[in-house]
Image (tube, rainbow, N blue to C red; front, top):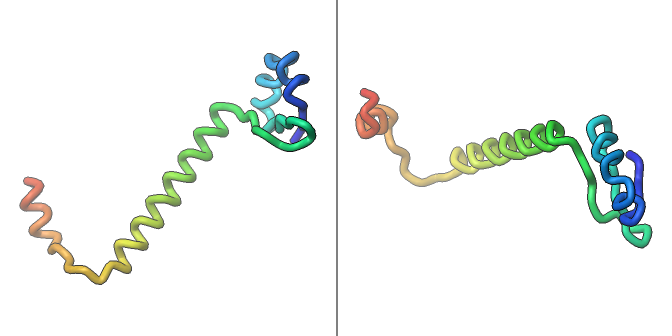
Length: 82
């Protein structure tokens, strides 16, 4: 990952946007990482992966829940699927 200072990034933002289509670009301020510029496609991959992990965690939590369950046939009937 290439790193650029905020001032360099400000001066050459169009080039950094183009570069972010190939690889993430680190933006630093006073030598400390502050942000990462990534392509929209890579962002969407990350968001999809995060949503998948959240769904898995929710499913695992539901399986661990000792509370009463609702029979599938009753759920289908209430939703008008039966």
